[in-house]
Length: 422
Ligand SMILES: Cc1cc2nc3c(=O)[nH]c(=O)nc-3n(C[C@H](O)[C@H](O)[C@H](O)COP(=O)(O)OP(=O)(O)OC[C@H]3O[C@@H](n4cnc5c(N)ncnc54)[C@H](O)[C@@H]3O)c2cc1C
Image (cartoon, rainbow, N blue to C red; front, side, top):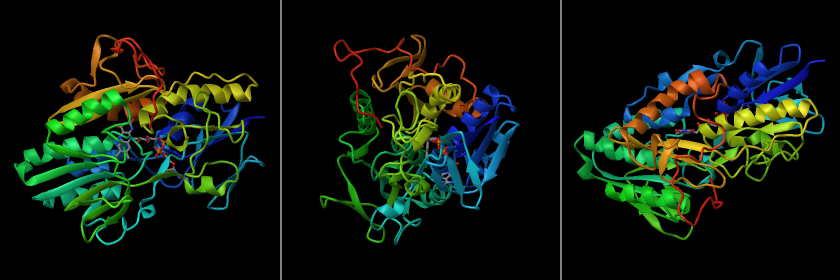
């Protein structure tokens, strides 16, 4: 009998997993069903560009079913809960899907209502987020109307998707207001709960230097407890206050709510405890997890999701075949950091190696931790690769799943020491 494989979530991870699985298993060997709650596949890295008029909202959205290969069933419904004891998924539309193997790819969800005042007075008037399509679109009008004052970019708490995106927003805002000839009338402030600009020491130092060079104030260790939209104030738990005229917030993230309703599946934030090398869940051997939904100590990023795909699909096949799993996922993360004025940096790291200077993927290649026009072009090209290579489940030529060491400049003594990740 054909194996029944169910994939929850038809975003980056669910789509690339289903497409890879379809190539691996013949239709007689497995049925593959993808479930998602809506039919709008958003190219999320494009959300960064929408507020600055550098991307059109319509250009970054495509129907989900069209990204899935022939022979994959697409079912549009919310997930109500997973019964891990019975190997069944209950959907919000009443459908029950029984499975032999389940892939959880339902990503992370924004929960702005977790922060006092955030969605109260001023929300979508002078407090915005670019982490959703409606938010990014509304922010575009607000930025266009902004002629002077203090713009604060605030990461409320970690983990978040694409931890460098808020920094990129600051750099692009600096560029945008320069273009409009009003940069000297605008105070830009980046407010983070971290003790530096980023989680890893070498990159943190470089990025803090760049913020300073561009005249962007950095406020660290600020744990936002309240957002007072009408008064224009961020208030931290230790009662510090930061005034703003316009606030761009990155709200608290959690896993999907159904994870919390599914006994034994998730943690207290509704992320799914997962083996960091095999991508098998801790909940049950026939459940695998890809992308932001997992509680891994890796960044929540599309690049990570792509690199995970190869190991996960291989392991799902091994599991159904009764073989030992491959424990080779190394936490590989690769992110372009747009820095404005048609330049970008690139960082490449994994569980054990923090972002270092050098070149990627070998000693001749894109500069690491250094601004360059080539990296900016790489960032722009990523959208093409997303639709035509990542989602169809193809490897990107010359870019391996595991992190390449060649080209990186390792410091003499702190060689390959494990670092905390996000
Ligand atoms: C502003 C921004 C900029 C970014 N920039 C970059 C970048 O430059 N580079 C990079 O690598 N990454 C970037 N990312 C991160 C990247 O988009 C995500 O990490 C990636 O999409 C994760 O894939 P995923 O499959 O885990 O989740 P998603 O792609 O978010 O997919 C999750 C899917 O699950 C569905 N779902 C959720 N709950 C349910 C439910 N209950 N029932 C049914 N369906 C459900 C959702 O509708 C969604 O389609 C960025 C993200 C943002 C927000």
